Length: 421
Ligand code: ATP
Ligand code: MG
Image (cartoon, rainbow, N blue to C red; front, side, top):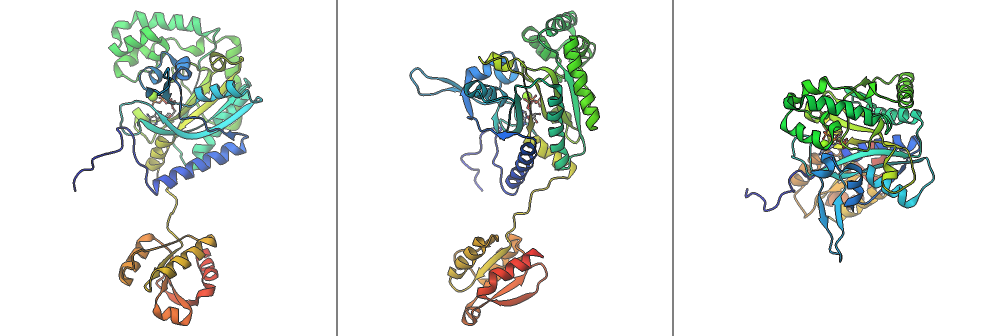
């Protein structure tokens, strides 16, 4: 076969059935859990003025290297970017609409990052997540983490670890950054060239380097949790004891920093041990108590998480859980008269809430029965000249190989009973 002229752009892919149904089912699991926890859904634009994102992460890879940005056709043109994540957009929406706090929202949708594609890393990928604005109570941090945990548990994932850290607050961060920078500068010669560039821009981000040659210096670096103010330390202690109370396991990961600059205090990540190390982060989140103010709003604490749907499903594959839901119809209608009986039978069944499919184009009985088998339907309903003459149709149980005839008028009831078993 000739190769197609066009393919999906690099780093993107078509998600076909039944995987697409599986993703929808996953979003439904998340929506149900978030709804039960008092969250309402938010849909925000897929693109924003680039300033929304620049404001929140001027020194991070996500914002400096990974954004898809473009100018619109306005005069003057507006500089826009596809959203690489949703926290910034949600804070922008908060400042724009000033909803009553606490404002608890959940979302599901695509994000865009100009990344080097590889397994579990795409240029368009999907996240589900939540954000809460207006609450600095550490017990909310516990609830948020518990929600993500319950989501993974509900999917059936057993090998997802919670990594936890505190990034402190604007009072303790400067002293820590000074200690960290001094350490990294002392050992700059031992760092990778990339880490040395990061060091110039944002020393904290050096801790996020996954390069082997940087690990020794990172392992010896001072850690934020040793530099917390009393207030931030108490906040963190309340989070850990809340998790203990709910029996949620965690590992303190003192060098966990996250992709964006705006995080304060509680920071967490979920690592799927069933996935290779480079893509084992299935989700993460944390507090961002300064972000709303950075976007021109009132001083408002915030916390949230984003969970990667694509990677979470890869972890489900690796653990053999959360299979795609069945998409087979209840009934496949075989019409060897003229096709119009299949039309009315299918519509009657569908109107009654049953799933029905058929073949098209007046194909042979044999070809239609083959299609019925391929469809995975439990029953085939066969309409032929004989059946028409008697006002009855043949119903064949494709699993058991038994067949019977039923009056056309009783068909819907019969199918309903037969498929309920
Ligand atoms: P990584 O360190 O793997 O690049 P990240 O820190 O950039 O992840 P976040 O911004 O925290 O990721 O996004 C939350 C989740 O979204 C990640 O844990 C991951 O599951 C998923 N994710 C992030 N980037 C991608 C991508 N390019 N393709 C698929 N999933 C992604
Ligand atoms: Mg990334």
